Image (cartoon, rainbow, N blue to C red; front, side, top):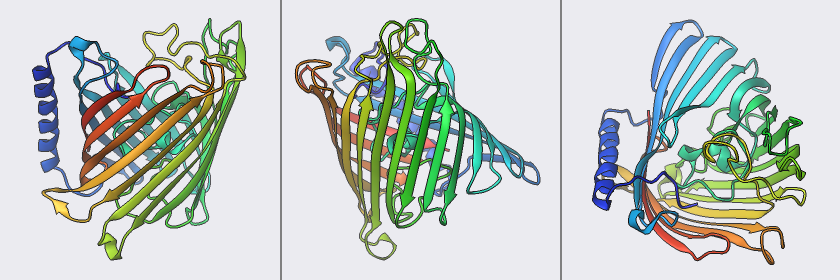
Length: 400
């Protein structure tokens, strides 16, 4: 949806000043940073023992927020701030702890994973992690080709697509084939919700790369690699949970699956004529004929907990981008467009097949890949049953 960040009670001038300050500070930091992908600060303690520390920041200015009141219709904020930490204790044993600042000012555990990785083909992770799901969710907000997270990616999670559980993953066929499967705490563990029986969520994803293997770690993905490789990847993901949706009185099984694809090609030797990107995804969500409980029911806000909000329907997205090969100042321009549609199950949420759509058109200014990027985006958002809204987004992201 367009409302990407919490809204502050301040004037438009104050919003612009605040957003400008955020962007200026991050741009200043970038001048001190190397231009290649980096592992932030690394401290070595001995053979196969080290600790890493990094940060990620996303800031935005969103005009005419359709979810805001007329007197507060624009918003500027640091919409995301993360602290990345990693450690290796043994050749085969690692750990990850990533923290994220919430919109209300509190902090939450984004990832907390104990990683046992003896072989490339078979690894075991336990803790809070990204569940096997679609490419967009495995990208996370920092590795999408666009700034705004897709409205059609609606897999449940305790926080930002994560859940607590155990997973196995691996890479085979010279890294061309990747798999991940896991069992997780699951959805709607609450007194008034459907899953008082505490049924787990089962999830899995398979992916094959027909050209170069994706240069992303573990089973994570990205929606653009800015010409680092030629990509033709097809992924298939699915999830299932008994009594995963609904209320304690009226419950249903949750099922979902999707297929997604990414094609990215360097045009000419060493991408002399640019890089073309095409991405698509198709989704099916099932709630067993039951309406789910409201998102965040019984929580401080919908951001907390893994409760409610799953809709029955069909969805898809399609996006394309082109990275212009010529530099403009310190970076390159990447124009892009994206269209999304969520079509709700017939006669379950209104007469016929009501739908929600969103169209994005804009460009990225890419200075250092996903580590430093600015985005300008025009957004047209049409939620089910209401008029369409238009907005302009200026966003940036910085990782170190």
